[in-house]
Image (tube, rainbow, N blue to C red; front, side, top):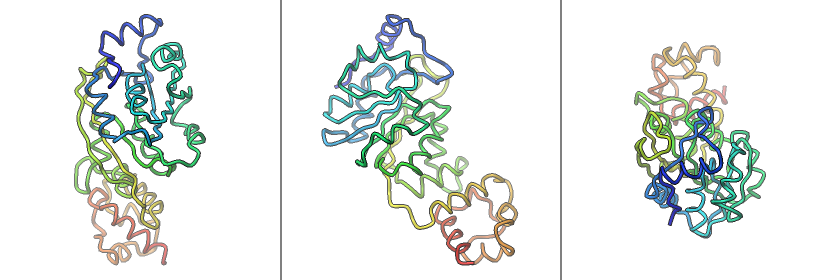
Length: 271
């Protein structure tokens, strides 16, 4: 069961410690115990797991993770929260006070397979998820709460309006294990937009996945251009190469699935 951090409870804790949510850090604390429990269930967290929590905030989700018997390492950028978390979490979880985006916490994983659970600030959500997928293979599962618009970009398929480089990275590194939405009123303070919790399970990446991601980054850097124009500098006859892997030179990147970028990376490597 989760610690029942309702909006009133969160306000009381913050007031007690002389704190206010920091807008520049995107602090919106989850204030609904049912959603906290739903996050834990989506992650299938149990006593065999090691869990990294990014942004413990007031500790409600942290304590729900601890209650499963999992080994919990929390990473919090705001060291103003030290006395508050000492009250709510105590020594039941290890807490590092550092910027999770720097990935310094990875050194504490000891090569174990780990689940990452996070209520991510909207301003760093995309970059942190993509960095973990590309650079931290020890993270086997991610359960992250993001701005719904950001989640849509991660989960989009080729041809969708939201499809872009983030979608390609997810498509080459993970499969979607579930999702659910969370309305603004279930946070304190409430954000201006809705949120979505998604689960991503790491999958083996195909050969040349990194090269494919770099190709996608180049193409989406000029997403309104046709592939023959945006990728022209990569090969003297890029149109012929595109055709050889089943892509139309006149296609735009939003219509190319992740596998298409992999096929193109393979073809380029053979030239």
